[in-house]
Image 1 (cartoon, helix red, strand yellow):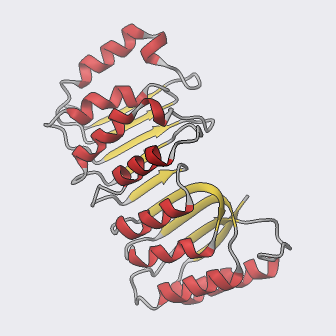
Image 2 (cartoon, rainbow, N blue to C red):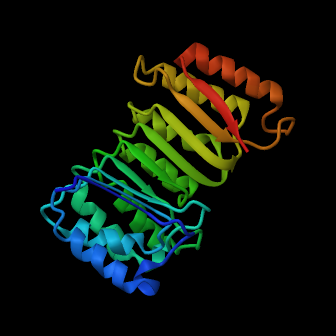
Length: 243
């Protein structure tokens, strides 16, 4: 019995469920008998949550990783797949990696709260990649996913204080913020100091942040150079800028 499923399309964002019904039904039928599955990766298939749902509901399956990728940045619509998200909680004891690329459709506060509570439920989660979260959501993730090692998030206008939540994630080694942030030199120096006071917990910490252009009032090019040196000295890690 297979332990890993890798499913990809050569075409962008194919909707198997509605345009290739025969292929979709065949895959779904086969997956119902794959009780040994541990890792699932699906790329460029819009109906990926529908394909994965029966696996999530199978009580004999204990998944370790779920990856749903959309190569051009347009993923599945969260509003259409509430059952998929709820079923993730069935694997809260085993799930270590979750990569759900979603469509940027805005969600209501109620919908977003449900999603966040589901995403922070796996106690074993080590890797999370998602661009769905607000500042408050990022803070919740930092506080509750205490085994997190790798976190990638998008967004806009993320401030310094959001990073304080990651003091409580002792295993975090890589934080990628692919967003235009409002980070300041003072704020970043403070968080690096706090992490360094935890002993060896955050040694080797890497931070990649989306910043405004060098020379802005928030962080200049000299500030970025300072941060790169400071994080090496304090944490043996690295600081990078994404644009």
